[in-house]
Each structure stands twice: as structure tokens, then as C-alpha cells.
Amino acid sequence: MNRRDSTLLWLLMSQWPGISRKALRGLLSLVPEPCQILALDDSDCLSAGVQSSWLQARNDYLRGLASPLQERAVHQCESLKALGGYLVCLGAADYPALLAEIPDPPPGLFYCGDASLLASPQIAMVGSRHATRAGLELAESFAAELAQRGLCISSGLAYGVDAASHRGALRVQGKTIAVLGTGLDVVYPRRNEGLYQQIATEGLLVSEFPPGSPPRREQFPQRNRVISGLSLGVLVVEAAVRSGSLITARFALEQGREVFAIPGSIHNPQARGCHRLIREGACLVESVEDIVQAWVAWLPAALEDLPAGSARAPSHPEHLSEHEQRLLAALGFEPWPLDLLAQSLGMSVDKLLPGLLELQMEGWVEQQGPCWLRCR
Image 1: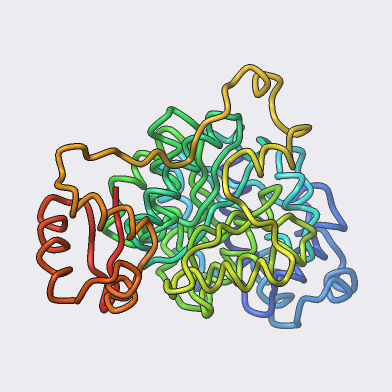
Image 2: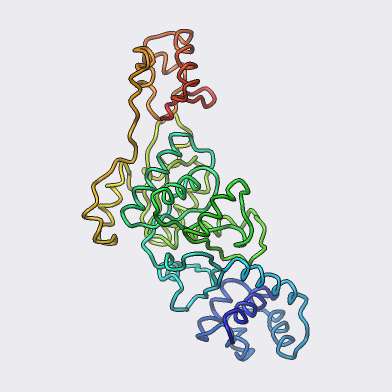
């Protein structure tokens, strides 16, 4: 049986009624190849966890009876082929070794792009979809330097920190993996279509969901366990207390992975999730060196020859007035409530606002609700 026929059979078997991820893993533990599942005794299949409805569908298939799912599976297989995508099942030699170790590994992974990245040392980078501009710049710069140090950057192609992390790696010709919460052929969010196409060409797209799977709320936590499972650890850049990024961090802890978090201002709601992680034992990260030192044994030998970089190099706007320079220095890169900023500078809000608005027009600061922050 060739690879495409095997993929079509997997798409059928994994979507017949009465099957679960756990049952699929049980079936794969009994035979070395997915196609050999067809030859298993009914009793073995039931012991693996399938239900009688799945057995009925399998036996109908063996008798040559048409399945109502056949047409859909054929279409899914054609979509995967059109993408240049493939399937790898748990137990295969090229299934990612780290992912196979987690408590709930996907029985099958669909992928498109550079498959060698599945075996590369990876760090997952996650964070808020509504990150501050400073948070986005931080994510991109950290991703770029980590990629230069030999790590593949894994994330989820979402708005915000995810997209910035992918872009940071690509900007320095580094490697990146996007783990999708949809089928490989479904671009979500649509705004990231250009990034999706670039990763398909220069990196790797991965999904456990069959082609054509639309975005569903319950699929994204499933996706998060794969992001952390593929990686040596997870770096959280910005995250609110209730955040999908914290779900990824919890998966990482359950999987025995390291969790890193970048602290932020106490006034920034997008930093509170990171602060919670740090209180619970995550490694506080102030520079890429904090991660490199934890993982030096995993990185390529070329690491030793690379100079230590800075994840953020603030610009020095000499042309600004002394008053504007003072405002910029007081703000920093974290959100500050206007009244606290005024108090720290010993100035009234009325005197502050004109300078802030001028800096905003020049692109040096931004306003977020009642707070202001430097953005470059």
C-alpha cells in the first residue's frame, strides 16, 4: 500500500464513529503500520478501546460496502496532496520523539513543509493575542535571537505574540513551526494568510486535525498541548490571567517541560499571567541568555561562536526636546496609568498630555485605555 492510500485509509478509520484518540493510540500499539489495523481481531480492537459502531464500520469496509464517509475522506486526501502535505502516525520512525512522550500524543500528525524540523530542538513561544506593541517587539526580537542560536520557534499562528514570534524567526532566516487548530488547508486567522504561506514555504505547518477542519473552540486547547509537546520548553511573553497561553504553560508542566516567563509592569494586565507563572515556579527571563544557559547542552556547537545579543535595543531619539526625552524615559516599555505617570514626574496631567500626544504622533508612544507606554 502506497503512502497516499495509507493516508486515505487513516482518514477513514480515524473518523468512523466510535473511535477516540486513546483508542487510536491503542490500535497503533498493536501493529507497526496503520493499514494492519484492518487485520486485527474484533476482540483486539475492543480491547484497544473502540466501540461496536467503529467495528461495524470497519467490517462493512472489509466487505466492500460503501461508507458515507468515503467521499469526505477522498476529498480530504486530495486536499492534503494539493498542499504537498503528508501524514505521520504515532510509532513511526519519523514521528517527533518528544511529542510521543507526552500523556496524550496525537495518533496522527498532518504536516506541510520542512519535515526535518519535527526532530529539531524547539522552543515554544506564546502570549496574548492583544499584546502591547512593546510585547510584540519583544516577542519578535527574542524569537529572532533564539532562532539564530539554533532553536526552532514553535507557536500557533494566532494574532499577537504567536505571529510576532514566527516573524522574528523568519526575519533572520531561522526555522519556525506553526501548529494549527484547524486543518492544514484552513488559514486561521485569515489576516495571517501571508505568514501562513511563508511558513509553508520556509518552515513547517502541523495539525492533528484532518484537512478541511474549520476553527472550533475546543480544538485550540488540543492544539496547545502539541505546541508544548513538540518543544523543550515554553516561553510566555505577555499573557492575561485568563489566557490560552497559560493553558499551554500548564500542558508544558504536565509534560515535564521547562516554562519561562518574561515579567512586565504591575500596571499592565497583559503581564499578570506571566507574574502568576513566575510565582508558581516558572523561570524569570530578562534576556535570551537566561534561556540559552538553561539549554546550552541542547543547542548546536555553533552557539559558542555567536555573540550574546540583546533582545531589545531602545532607540535614542536625540532630536526630541528635553521635556519629551524626560517623558519617554519615565514611560519605558510598559503601560503606565496617566495619573501615576504625572505623580512620578511631579507634573499635572494637563502639562503631560501635549507632550504625550506629540510623541504619539511621531510614533514613540501609544495609548492603551487609561495607560501610556513607549513602543520603540
